[in-house]
Structures are given as structure tokens and as C-alpha cells.
Image (cartoon, rainbow over all chains, first blue to last red):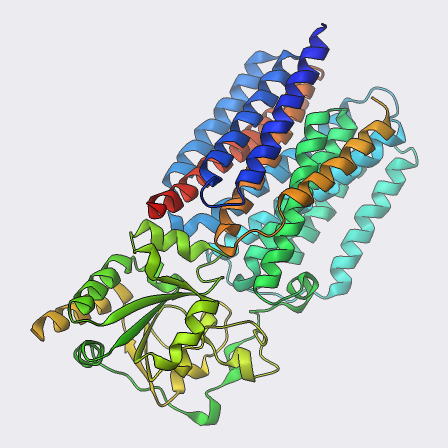
Length: 457
Length: 93
């Protein structure tokens, strides 16, 4: 058996492990092992590649890998669970960047004119890789709230950038070997990546990241065709396809179409589009009042949001819940599928805080319970409780399924200020006569409520 | 390998990808995205394959960056996914 045969066989082992691992990621019980299986598959693919004849420059390889490990491992270890979405965006971005760089070098290194069946996938990889790199970095900046501006780019500008990149690609494919053109393609595609993501509001960012993730997969597959490497083709395409399905499912969970996410710009609406309905005013309350209300309730539902997670108030909330249970008050948690900043993100955050799993209710299960709920505690969850999604047809979140907290007997909203939520729109819930606002840092407020509860004796 | 064989592999991989991720619970969307994200870091192989073939400082520098990027994508992606899934494991107990 030749060395090339060994490599090919090892690649087959690697694909199998990647596919099995990906499949196991579908269920919570097998997911941890699934991820590890995929990682082993990746390791096999890398080792097999290093066995290929003609692999050289070991020092440079070592430098590159060492740099990657030195940056990637500490970043992955130290990132807070609340910051996970932007970390995923960054990792996706560097993947896209790697594709684009590899495409450039392959183009530069070609001694003769490249045949079209290499050149076309190479140009595709360059364009999509560059879009993915720059788009992901913008997504990171937005989620990190370093970039709060939302410029609305005319659709014609984006279309124009794409057309220019494609036209340059056609010029190269027609036989021009000018390297400058290739770099220009990267520049125009990168500009498109930036301008396409800048207008998109934070609430939609998960769908954007997932789309860019699928893009990077596709560009890696294209690079695989250009480089004649089956491992890249298979793994890249697996991600391209599974990422597309995932994107669609996420968009469905938010009741939005993918086109709508990219072109309508949810969450870019300014607060003035939705003033307080009927000019109502919000009523503010005190921790002592909240404590009394809670102590005499039968059922309390906690609706946690990103604000709670940021304030690290989970444990304080769990303490309040324990205190209430001593008084025979039932406490449940209502979890919106997109609470947090990504679908499923809140479950990760609450699991980290050891909140008992059987108290966590998904939206469809808890919505029927609000009718018999005495007090709903909304902690830093803004958009997912906004009744405007049901009633205001021109609201950017219209049609998104929400938690029906306004159906409970009374609502207490813990919030730092009256500022609007991540989607940047006002919430009529705050002006509802049965709603009271408890202003302040969530962790501090919940702590005070706990003290008052204990003082009730 | 000829182009048609490669295209056949591409199409088959697409169907496998679509088939493998059908109907995932909401709860797992974030870890799953992160897991697939780690897998496309496989593009690091492209850097490994090319770096022996080229010479010239600029190409070497670009490829070292590409390899570093790909490694961050792979290593960071799998680690982060493992941490997230670890949370789920705890609560299953």
C-alpha cells in the first residue's frame, strides 16, 4: 500500500468520525461524546495530511499551529458563557480568513495558468471566505457592543459590491493573471461582508452567525476542490449543508425568514417608532413591596433574560426561589427559545448556575400557566416578553412568538433603566397597569428582595 | 482525482450534512452551531498542504497566518463546544 493510499484510508476514517460525531450532537445525552468524536476525526485528518508526500517546512507549520493554539486555547477556556455567541462568531471568522488566505497563495503559487476547474472553485473560496471573515468580525463587534451604530446600507450598494467582485472573478477566469485583481476581489467581497452585517440588529445575530458558518463550510469545500483534497470537500460540505439547515431552524424558531433577517433589518428600529401606548407611564416599586407580593403568591414564574445573566443574578434568584418554596410558593422558570443571545443560550447559562432542570419550562409549556400565575418576575428579558409582537403589525418583532407574561395577575420587571432592549424597541408591557418596575442592577435588586423576604419571618 | 468524482463527493456530503442535522431541539442550537463551526476549521489542511509547495516570504507569512487561523478555529471551536455541552451534562444528573 502506498503512502497516498494510507492517507486516503485515514481520511475515510476521519469522515466517518466527523459524521458520527455530528449526528451525536443532535441529542443532549450523546452530545458531549459527539463533540469529542468529531474532534478525534479532525485529529485523524490532520495527522493523515501531515503524512502526505511533499509536506514540508515543518518549522513554519509548527509556528502556525503554535500560534493558533496559543491564541485559541486560552480564549476558549476563559470566555464567559454569556459571551459565547461572539466567541463562536470570531472562531468562524478566522476560519473564513484562513480559506481566503489559502486561495490567494494557491493563486500566487500557480506557475502556469490555472485550469478553470481549479480557478473557479478558488475564486468562489476567495469571495465567500472573505465575506465570512469580515462579516463574522462585524458580528463579533456588534454582540460585544463595541459597535452600536446601525447604518442602513442601500441594497443596491451590496448588490454592486457583489457584482464588482464577480466581474473581477470573470476577468481572472478569462485568463488575466494579474494578482492585483485577486486581492481586489478579496477587498470588495470583504466590504460586502461588512456592509451586509452592519445593518442587522443584535436579536438576529445568531441567524447571521449561523449563515456565515454555513458559508465558511462551503468556501472550505470549494478550496478542497481547488486543492484536490477530499477531506476538505467532505468536511466543508458537511458544515455547509448542516449549517444551512441549522440556520433555517433558528430563523423558524424566531418566526422569521432568512431573507427577512438579511434585508429587513430587525432591531434597527429606533425607540420612537413605538412610544408608550396612550402615553402611559411606568410604575416603579420597592424591594419590600416585591417581597410581600411574592410571599403571598401561589405560583411565581421567573422569566430570565440576558440582563440577568450579565448581572450574574442567577444564584440570587435561586436563593429567592428557595426562600419562597419554604413558604409553599411554587416557582417556575419560563424560558424563551431565543432568550439570551442565541437559541438555547439561556439553558446553558441557567445550567451553569445550578438552577434545577425540572423547573425550567419551555415557552409552549409555560404559556398556558400564566393565566394562573400570581406574580411574574421578568429579569432583564425585554424583547421576548414584548406584547407588541402580538399586536403591533409594524413592529420589527411582529409575529415573533413571545412569553405571555401579560396574562399573569401581576408582573414585576427588574431592569436597570427604561432603556429599550437588544432589539432597540419599546415594550408596552412596562406601561401596563398591572406591571411594576424595580429599577437597579438585577443582582443587587434580587438580593434586596431576598433580605426583605427573610425579614418577613 | 477528476472533477466529476469530486463533484459527486461534494453532492453526497451535502446530502449527508442535511440528513444528519434534521430536527435539532432548540436547546442544542448554540452548541451545535459551535460544533459545526469547529469542523470547518479543517481548512487548516489546505495551509499544511500548500506550505511545502511555495517559497517566498509573503506566501510563507500568509500561510502561517492561515494555519494559525485554522488552528484557532479547530482547537477553540471544539473546546468551547465541550464547555457548553458540559453544562448540559451537569444538569442531566
